[in-house]
Amino acid sequence: MKRLLATAIVLSISSIAFSAPAPTFSAKRLSDEDKTLSSDAFEGRGPATAGETKTVAYVIEQMKAAGLQPGGDLKSGKRAWTQAVPLARAEIVGTPKLSLNVGGKSQSLTQGNEISVRAALDGSKSVAIANAPLVFVGYGVKAPERNWDDFKGIDLHGKMAIVLINDPDFETGVGDFGGKAMTYYGRWTYKYEEAARRGAAGVLIVHETAPASYGWATVKNSNTNTMFDIVRDNPSATHPKIEAWIQRDLAVSLLKSAGLDFEALKKQAQTREFKPVELKGATFSADYAVDQQVITSQNIVGRVVGSKYPDETVIYSAHWDHLGVGEPDAKGDKIYNGAVDNATGTAALIELGRAFAHAPKPLRSVIFLNVTAEEKGLLGSEYYAANPLYPIGKTVADINMDALDPIGPARNFSQSGSAQSQLLDDLIADAKAAGLAFAADPLPEAGHFFRSDHFSFAKRGVPALSFESGNDLVNGGIAAGDAAQKEYTANHYHQPADEWQANWTFAGMAHDLGVLYKLGSDLANSRQWPEWSKDSEFRATRDATAVERK
Image (cartoon, rainbow, N blue to C red; front, side, top):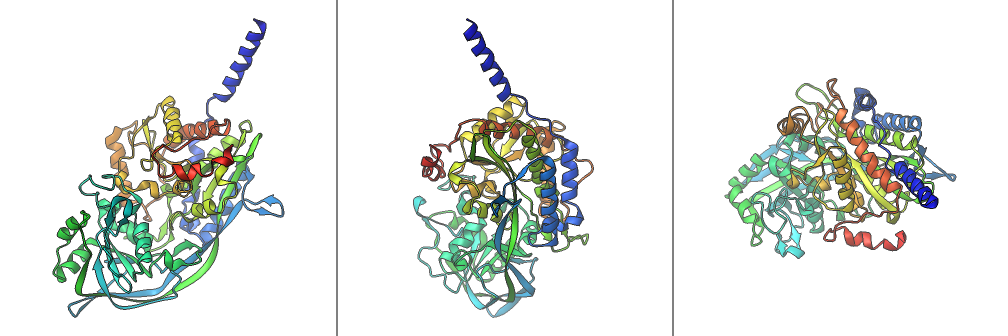
């Protein structure tokens, strides 16, 4: 009996140790860090700018003060605080000359107004395209597993492809692409990649707010500034020479001038019988120089080394970058501060690091990965996942934080996208215990799963999710939460107005970080390896590294 009692006491103590409540997170500290990071002094935190230098120095200073150890590149046998990320940097020199010609009549286009052209990422130092033929290729999708081909063998060499955004299912909500939920075929990155594979001179994506899930201001601000990419051996295999968006009104008038109806063509493009349509007598021209450089940006890496399994790693991630200094808004403000996107996530990362650094050392290692160039296409996380500091096969999970809600506490939470995994199951259980209900992504058609840094890990098999703050606010309910989200998207997202506000309480973030802490702490103090759902497109990739986890 004494032996049983002693055993019970030990088990009880062990249980208490591992089910101890999460630490308290300071809303004031979160607010102060967000305010600093999004101040004008940090110049919008653009990669390869003075703003990056200030940001990296500040975050390292905060991680040191929080008690973290450096977890970056090995230098002379010691870990640095950063991982060097070489990036191709491209910027249009001066004002690009852009025009359409229909039936012999020329129409000049203004960068940022009717069209938004990205600086060439195919390695070109100049772009000189004269009277390239225009071809409408529907949604620009080649999906053999769905028996879908929008191209039908058309030769796009030397031609400009006009493409619709999102999937063929978007408007109807039913079909071969999963209904409203966006697949990767619907993402703008896929449209460019597929056109490059087919040798197109360029792509003009037709912007429509609903299927894009953001307005023209976001398109303009994201595409008319300096562009970046990871350094590639053959960049033209991924990027056509011209990557651009055009306003819907321009597309409608262009097609009308060529004797075609935009809405009728869109309806045709929603069927697998669609065939590409050449715009007779219509051409596109462009002429501008491109400043091409290779620069080095930095991922910032803090670490708590595991006591028993240091080579197994739980990752918390968030991007530190925003859009830097760009086109002025109506008020003349040129600094894109990124208070929500993503000073919130960076502040959260620092505070989670503080909590782990002051807790008993976990069995597994935990890293706090503050990545660069998310706004340029998830480039910092892509570089880390392709060049991991710690083995991908022994990476337990990635828990990402991007654009958290600083307004106030909510009764629920969500995730970016609809991918299913044991990691999400664990998060739902932890959140329920903390009074948070799970709400599925309300806008699966927006393709949020592909738009944040966890995707770089997911496509390499690592169970990953990106936490989304809830919309059922304690003060005002779902109506208030949805209204706040719509207002932010319309008036602040990727605009200079994304600035710290004195009335933000950060109370919801402080509460939710307790849930994210427990999720990561439980993983770091266990032998659990969460899995993707059996029907997940990422399951096979994860299974291929199973031998590393035995």
